[in-house]
Image 1: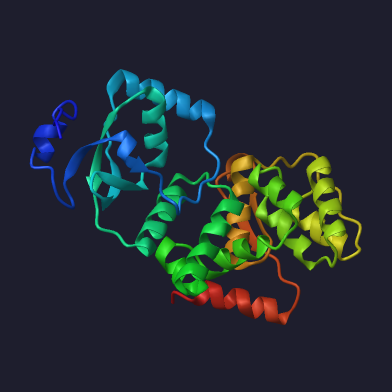
Image 2 (image 1 turned 45 degrees about the horizontal axis):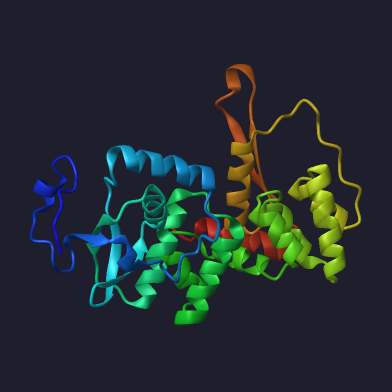
Length: 283
């Protein structure tokens, strides 16, 4: 295989003895197949085009990771976005680090890489957790430990997979959040779940309002003067998934803008005890 330089100084830093595990190889892109455990199903086309343009201009500066599958055959471990963009840019050869991973480690690494990007949609994330549990007989606790999440967080995302396809499509497109969708699991029929999900999208109902509707209460009208940023909504949703109950974050105003409160809702003694166990588990 003809060796080419890897870019400004990269070849010198990594060395030219590029043959075995842990070394950087230059591999024909046609000899690399995608990772079959890749959790991300959708890649933003505009983002890929932008990365491809950067690669055309400066080259692929960060190697992908691959494992050997046979003579001159490799399977991608991490770096699928770079791999796709490199193909789009017309590269014939790309730098790659060879690793010795089994199928289970392949699945774990692909999931962790995508979680670190923090834009994996909740359906693909839940499917990846389920695939790890089903394929390798892992518990929710074991999966949570491997990916750096809490067990309730993993459990809640996996439970969302039981929702109807249309509701899952709303989640994939991020038109509703996991916190808004979770109460729908308590409804009996798929028709009810879909109807309320459509209403959530149309009326931008909060997770608390959805719970009140399901309990038969008229949801309180939101205070017009309170504007919650998308960032704070995302934090509320992540914390809510971690503890399995609605979470609200409130900031002060004026001189107290850097102060605030984080509140967690519970419905009964059992929920209170569960939340306290989660909060105390690291003590």
